[in-house]
Length: 145
Image 1 (cartoon, rainbow, N blue to C red):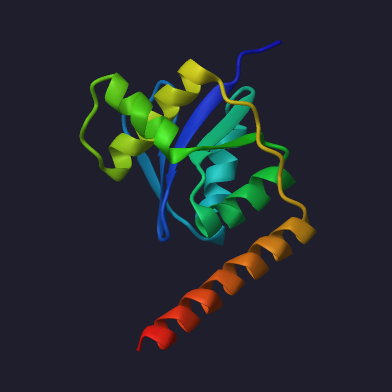
Image 2 (cartoon, rainbow, N blue to C red):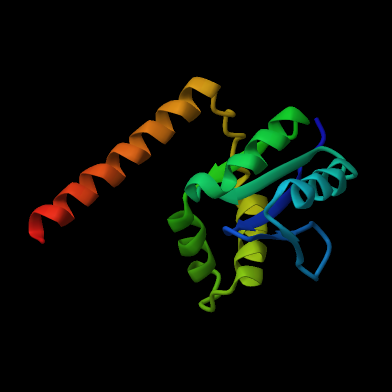
């Protein structure tokens, strides 16, 4: 079995910072449909690609769906694990580019298993729970006011 070509991605609301294996420069693309389409195209060129990103809530939703549609494995890992790994390797600074590179190093060392893509029912339930939490927080704020 061929070793996966891990790709580390630092996800934010507006952009994705991508660390490719063997490439020193971090590539930045918008976190929208066209940016992710370009990312998927570049990732597909790798032999046996495996994308790794931190679990950052809703900002990974489009990325997760598009990679699942292309059958590219994706691992959503705990941000604390990646941060602790970076600290253990002596990397204390924190920028989007540094985070993407740290995710790639974490993936190479830890080889995380692919995360299953959420079903449409799970996505709907996640949205409902998130909205309920917002409403509960808003009600608590109003009580205090």
